[in-house]
Amino acid sequence: MMFIRRNLWAVVKVLVFVSALLPACYLTWAALNNHLGANPIEALSRRTGDWTLRFLLITLAVTPLRRLFGWTGLLRLRRMLGLYTFFYACLHFLVYLVLDQFFDWQEILLDVAKHPYVTVGFAAFLLLIPLAATSTQAMMRRLGRRWQRLHRLVYVIAVLGVIHYWWLVKADIREPLAYGLGLALLLFVRLPRFAHLRLGAGR
Image (tube, rainbow, N blue to C red; front, side):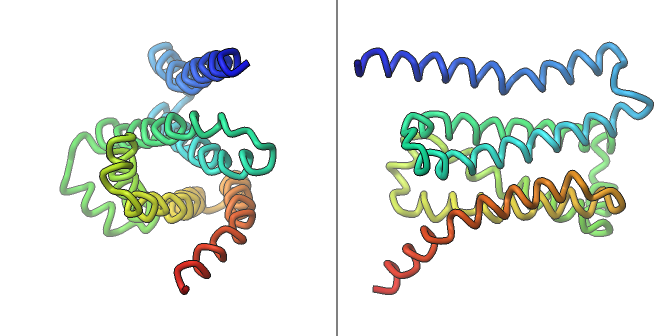
């Protein structure tokens, strides 16, 4: 029975890996075949940003789903989903860096200083880097309890990501509002856990 369950989760892991790669494959195909509309750079930036937020929220949903339904195997997918979040964040940043700004670092620095949504988005991306770099089992063992403290930055990153999107769209806030509500729900279900950790720290 254990062997069957282990093989089942191995198949699920492969399916999730392939499924998570499909949006990037589609965007590549759409870009090469001029299917991104009148402003392909903006479309690429928007869609890679969308997928970054989606995978971030999916990653945050793993723990509540595991506790709610007892699906312990979901933990085997969390690291992969987190790395896909970083992957799409890198694509989002590269679209901005290469296609939008053409490696004009002076213009990028001015953009970061001038536009708050760029500042917030850039901060979120920088905070993602140490989380991706320490996602391995070896780094978990090496950092010990510091690993958990470091990876709680994911909540800050998620908030910054929603703010980045909200400030970017300005007028039509329906999509960032949906992400914001999803994030609020995921944080709400964690409140008992946060309270328990604070009580434990105070003892």
